[in-house]
Length: 297
Image 1 (cartoon, rainbow, N blue to C red):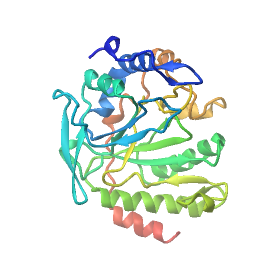
Image 2 (cartoon, rainbow, N blue to C red):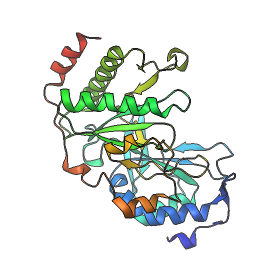
Image 3 (cartoon, helix red, strand yellow):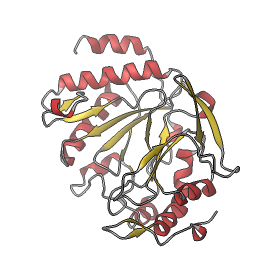
Image 4 (cartoon, rainbow, N blue to C red):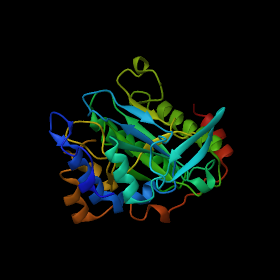
């Protein structure tokens, strides 16, 4: 499938900014080579808005029975059953899913060949309201601890929604249970060290204006937004990979880049995460790290 064959391409999906399904498909067609390395071989969760973002969308894990046979799928175990996830490993699949009203693509933190062992650890920094300065400060705190205390390599990206993701590539020697416990321990430690700035409180009424340091994505069957994925927000902002130095730009926010300006950025600087897979951090003695952190929580 090519973007020119997208049905109902003139349907407006973003009513205030007037962005159509055809324009969304044109974006995904153009960005596919940058995006597919992050999608390939991972169970996919679709966030679909067949009638546009002014109507309630839905999340879809199971591939629809009417999806064509050439769409690759994989049966993935879940509690008390199985899920037949779509695997998006080529542009034709990406564009077909857009034709079905998919706006945002969420990916697993592990690949098909080793589903119980994540190849990344993610901290999702979610601010109260739209305080992006708080997000930037929190990201720097997280980075400093992960790199200077644990010797891990970190990457950063906008979510296209409200905050930032700080991401650590892993070598897949530890399973989700270990990585979840470690991410939880790190988040709680950082919150205890910065009690006026950071919190791990899941309930919003308990955060009291602090930055929510979300570690919960580091679990089996949980997902994170795929780099270069569009979010269901007016002007079609894009989850964008960054260089750490870009956080010093006072004009930066979670929605700075969108389907209109992302390609100028890519032409100018390429993809800052191009070498992501070269770094596969090994977390040595995770239980010792947790024990050490426990002394300060």
